[in-house]
Length: 247
Image (cartoon, rainbow, N blue to C red; front, top):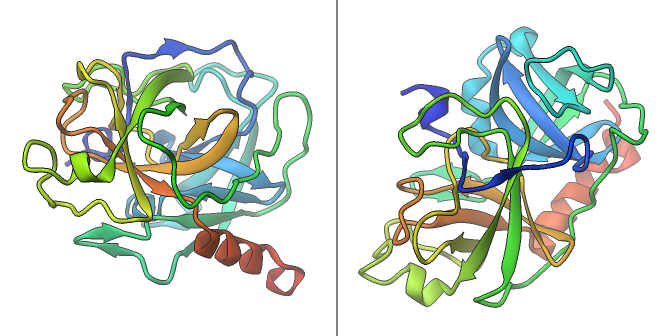
């Protein structure tokens, strides 16, 4: 299974104005975009834990900040080697849970108009029907084509856990728990899918969740699954960003 067909992409979105989402990070391996991420500290990126499986050798891994086009040689880009990955201690793959990870850059980013921080905001829940935005470089076609060269955004609608766990939707496979969210489109035309796991879900201007997974891109009954950045995750993030973890 290729990275393009495993992670998350943007379906039915639009290209954003260049550098209008300066917090976005591209996690790359061997020169290929694998996952999205969010710069939350000059030396730390927040992303999805399952992205770690695509980084077998740290020397071929890098994080690119300040990008709009992945292919163009943009002067705004800052590229970093990865110092370490820290997955949430309770992360599991089957079923997927606690899908959150910190990535420490080898050196600190230089903050400017093209590279800025976006701090996660703790949230116990997001009401069904809330409109949120997902940002990423993932593919724009549900048939698993190549990732988008330019950064794109789509607006999705939060779906209740009861509905998402119902027989017509995920039927408890996976179980959408209190630390997870479903969001998509009633017609299945707006979604996240391959290429942008680890990207942000921004609701009313606040960064509340991370793209985690889904079953089929652009399927109304299999909406995108997101990790809600609850207080337990916020506490874990803060503990790892503390000065005592400076190594």
